[in-house]
Length: 188
Image 1 (spheres, rainbow, N blue to C red):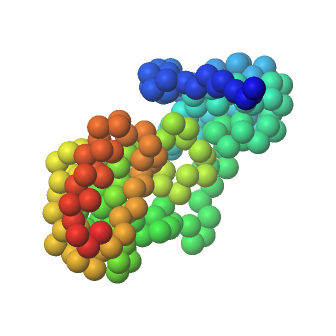
Image 2: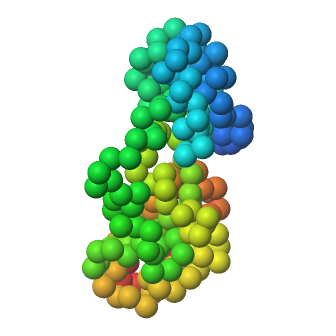
């Protein structure tokens, strides 16, 4: 007799609900984890002005309670070091802020990044796209169509990489539309 393993996986609605119920306050995050906020942790609270804190509760559940040095906590907790300006630092290290059309970054000859979504489930403090002008590059049908027209007009493009934020935060019908459009372009 075969041993059948059953697995309860979250439904699509579950992840959408989780993303709608994220923790955005450093104080609340520390309270949920039973971490005492020392002076250094408190000084970092204002860093959320630079880049918002965004942590789903399912991610928090994987953190070690009472441990201010938990690696998952350090990945998302605002820090006063974010205010330090380092010599030679650039807010655009990959030179991505000058896209050819909204939401499409064509930096290399044969490939381009299509910015599907401007956010992620978790805002990591080390995100290299934290300063990217997502408001000007929103993943909308109109911007995507402009990007598809550009891709179709540039036969050297044979690779389109879905990027963002997290492209998997797009709804199924959005990903389906994008894939259908790209499949219709012969050189991709």
